Image (cartoon, rainbow, N blue to C red; front, side, top):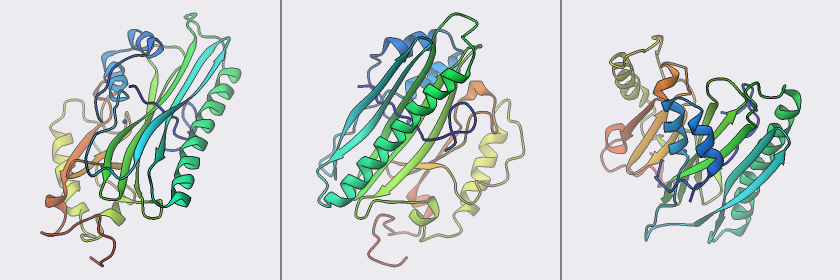
Length: 264
């Protein structure tokens, strides 16, 4: 099942705010958009195809809900997660309201963008697609990334991504610093490793120094993936630069990043 969602208000194409498990491509709209774009966007579209990982340690059930809007000049679709099975029903309602509100914001901004834009020179409808990718769902942690795709004419569309990791105990959205609290100096590990990989990548723009105070990330397997926006350090054809680091490389031996009952 393909899962898509909007990411709130982004300044660039739709709104301001800033998806990796494989699934089946079942949407003609996305396929049609992919036919008009360069291979990098096709790859980005594939990242939006997701399925919830099955695990005996899953904390919650995640289903997909959909919002759609059809205008004379545009098609708009947002798919967003809806969780169930959480013991704390107050937190469950809070998270579900959060995801739904973001989808509503995406659809609303897409409608506004369509009304403010001129008709597509190519004659094709504008397309706004939003989805999410559930990357971790156990140990009291729910991690995912949301990704949007907007085609408003031209050679290709534009994609935006945002990672989010929640502590299901209270619904707190965790920064990477909070998740890696046992090693406040983790940047001394990730910064040189990312710099080295970027320098070895053809087309690198230069200028990378550090992941900064609030890196974009999501949890995957036994570690985290730090990623950057399109165009920030590499050409469009490279997609979203991603860098995986296992917890064993970032944290002291024996540390459980998901155990918030003890001070690290």
